[in-house]
Amino acid sequence: MNDAKSNQDQSSHETLFDTVFTTPLDRAARFSFDEQVVACFPDMIRRSVPGYGQVLAMLPIFAQRHCQFGQTNAEGHRVSRIYDLGCSLGGASMALVSASGGFDANDLQIKAVDISPAMTDKAKALLADNYPEHDIEVITADIREIDFAPCDMVVLNLTLQFLPPEDRYRVLANIYDALNDGGILVLTEKTHSGDEQDDAWLVERYYDFKRANGYSELEISGKRNALENVLITDTLAQHHERLAQVGFSRTLTWFQFLNFASMIAFK
Ligand code: GEK
Image 1: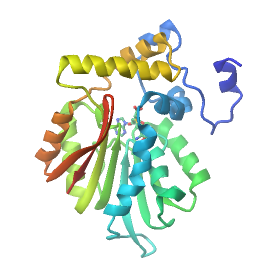
Image 2: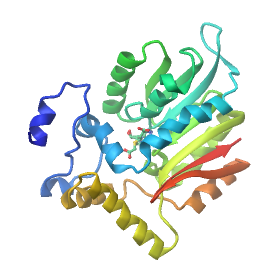
Image 3: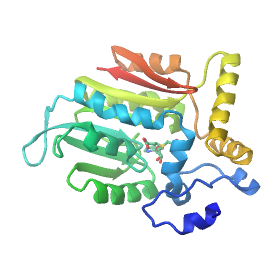
Image 4: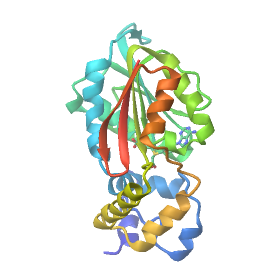
């Protein structure tokens, strides 16, 4: 069955195969998180982000160690508040509350924020279907504009890279201010290396990774062009320096897979 046909045959909650950049004309498009991307998002992110599943799987493990249950929900129950910023379809939130995470349904109060209504509409439906008993609020907003409530953990999984570089410090400073002492930020990003030769090797192996996951040359170059000036990477050194500047006393890179890395910052 061809991709288009198989996509049509699936129900709206099923994951469609990513065919966003399959024709030469698509290459001219600027990347945006619209309905077309939302429909195939889980497939796209798994096939194009090395280590995506491994990073998500560690989130509840980190939460178990660093959540302090210092907040109170509307029913007077002690909870830990967690922000999932740039939540897309809620993958990180779902990983946090999944059965293997070890939390009870009313332990965590999650605020999942995304600027794209197409994403948040679908995230709400997925969470209502799969985790109706959990306290996960999906909010359609720009993370540069929100007022943070005190929290124990913030997840920025592949989101900071989409903000204009000049806005990144302010968002991280707001996160730092909202975190309780002992709280953590998990920051996952596509990065580039400061060394030109290393960078070329990492980028080429990243394209090999995408080829191995079924993407064609047309799709790889189409996506690369569409993301130009939309996804702007920093080096790991720039990330750690900025995190230190906003006040985090200790940061470390806990995961790296080719040009993707995840850092943890401790308040
Ligand atoms: C996951 N974290 O599956 N405010 C809020 N959301 C934004 C903003 C902004 N200013 N800019 C971009 N976004 C997810 C994956 S995807 C990564 C994150 C990717 C949102 C944007 O709408 C998109 O949903 C998300 O950030 C980035 O764990 O597609 O490579």
